[in-house]
Image 1 (cartoon, rainbow, N blue to C red):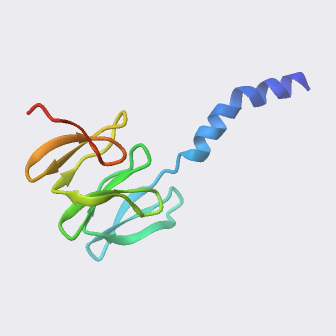
Image 2 (image 1 turned 135 degrees about the vertical axis):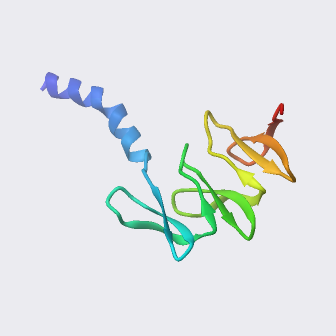
Length: 116
């Protein structure tokens, strides 16, 4: 019994992380981007003019000429407002607005201007 309890305690963080980590991959159908899961099931129907890979639970996606960030259900959580948007790393992403690069946080607010 003690051995089973120790195993559960050791594996619990791994199981919790795996539950919160949904792996989605971009697909293109009829010129529009959507996402599938690891089994090939469509999770987000193709609807974006362009889309990047998911990182930190968000992916850049383009509609009407502007980029924003979607969550794993395809809902924009940062409204389309950028000329270009990169992926998130350590809570920040580079996004261009009117040709100027900015580092933004996960709420879409500018953390600081890029130094180049």
